[in-house]
Length: 487
Image (cartoon, rainbow, N blue to C red; front, top):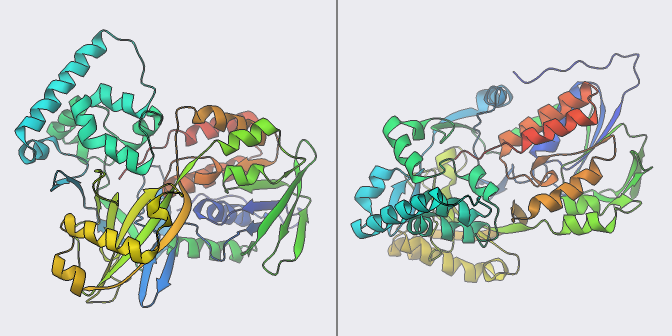
């Protein structure tokens, strides 16, 4: 069951909570505070709730914004998923693979499968490279600073270039300037020694390394957001869509009011605010403060960068296209970095005899893959789907019935080597206001999943409802930095 909070009594004046952003984090904390008796107003700039944790209809198909799953190691979150989804909850066995050197391998990588599937000369180079790196580390006290450092020291140059280098370039950018923190949070195994050990002991199949099963709603991932939104409103909370925040007014110590343009373009003001919570992008949030934030804070927010995402939906006149839920493609010779099949998550989202696969291209907003039109990108994507064996040549010409894309400009936080310096400047300013909280993937520039967003919402709500102080809040924020991504 989800965490329970005491409601305000009828004699108490309702405290007022304003929340920016109706993604998973915003919806969850809105539901918890509204249930506890707060007068909650949730403001969302888009015309739909859920952010990327949502589904949309296209003709007779329900589609997600890329592949999503409900899985967590955080205590209580899986039971919350099950309680929220109830009879709508499917339990799915997770299968995913890695495409490398023209072959598919289990993911996370199994060293024994790699040993039998990769050219022995390449394996020998990897082994010698690792030994050289290991010996070198015995005589060096140099710490890992970059993503490249982390994998060079743990796997050696040959293995790093085979498995990790290109994937970093495709998803986050230059591995020389990406922080080692990203590698630690994104890859659960730090070196070849641990990889082999885990294969022998079965550790790689444990839930802190890879999810064997996950939950998924019958009618698409967005069902979670729909249910949370219903709960917010059932507790008396208000959700406004199509809203454009204009100003966040402070008195130097607290946020006192927020000015916004509603869906009719009429200017509105909410004041007497007890709690102000943001889940929106930090740069956007900082830009709203009146009086203005100091220039060094605004500059620091502007220095936090994101990679964009182009989602390519390929419709096929066949019942299934993939054996796995999704495939990873680390090599730069293929335009996409992941391919998934909606129907593998729920057969209720796509009609029988049809299927949809989603190819994800992570890129910069000024890159050719982001700029080119759908017709041009269709040719590129279909050619690469044929190259990696997902589609046969005759299927490309005969079974592909539709193709369209969605562009998402700011999706993946780029953990540059100096990102912590910039992030600290921004958060120190925000946390100087005693009634302000910024949480969520965008609100904390935090590389996380939906379960982490729900946990952030729960812990923040507990803190607010227990009247916690700012020192206690700083300790909670540190917990958010311990999250790891488990595929």
